[in-house]
Image (cartoon, rainbow, N blue to C red):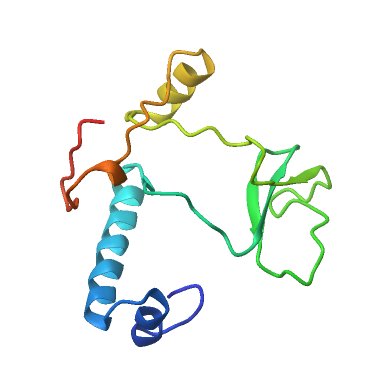
Length: 140
């Protein structure tokens, strides 16, 4: 809605939900993002397989991941550092590891992962039979 400069009615139509439902989703997301910024909490995106309508690239210089929605323009450099050392993401390559079932300090988790002490539990919230609201606790 914000980055495409759409109103609530257009955004709701694009998502296939009613305007009041969109308003509730938007308000919840806005609060979570604000809370993450102010209180340093993490933002976690969970669910099934994600599909993008634009190509994704990784930079071999700075490690940045970026997409390129302007399909008619060729990508020649990293969107962050400007390096030409970039690779296009291909769905059949394993460039991203997913580790479900962990929580905590991101630096501690990264150290555990790099040390081989953190593994994917295979469990995600999308596999549960209930909906999560504020104060969600799944135990993973």
